[in-house]
Length: 190
Image (cartoon, rainbow, N blue to C red; front, side, top):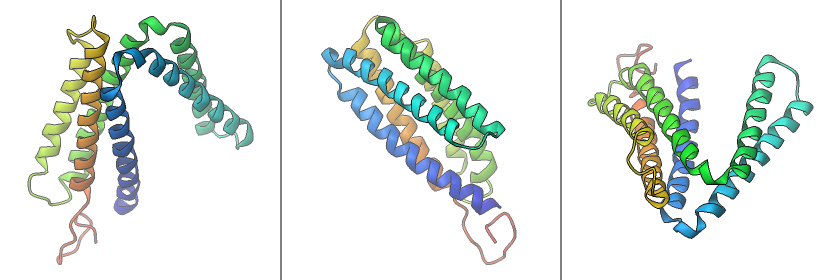
């Protein structure tokens, strides 16, 4: 059971690290004149994801999880429409969204540091705990930062925090995988 949970965590960590690195690089490299185009692209991507999720709901079985995904798809669709309609204020909302996501990711990493990393019997498992607290701190920093007036600086800060989140996600992957030992037991993967 432990290895099934860790395999799922491994896949999620690898995928999220790759996506976050790509997103952070795009946001950091993006020139100021392309910020409006990037916001439009973000709005359209949200709408396409919402439409695909809604179509999957109509074609799939009607379980509770599918209804929750359908509700999430409706929220994503509304968010995509809001991004397209209110483009001027979107950059601030995206900064708040990324700050919130960083806090959530930091909390998830903190839980994983105590649930899996401590049990993996690796020395220095507490480093993941410190990094998760730093991740929560960067999320709070994006919420209350002094860069609200300059969109270019705000995009750079969001891009750097996303790259930091990708690094923490990769470290989480390394530290949560248990080490097999010769003595056996449920804590060390036997």
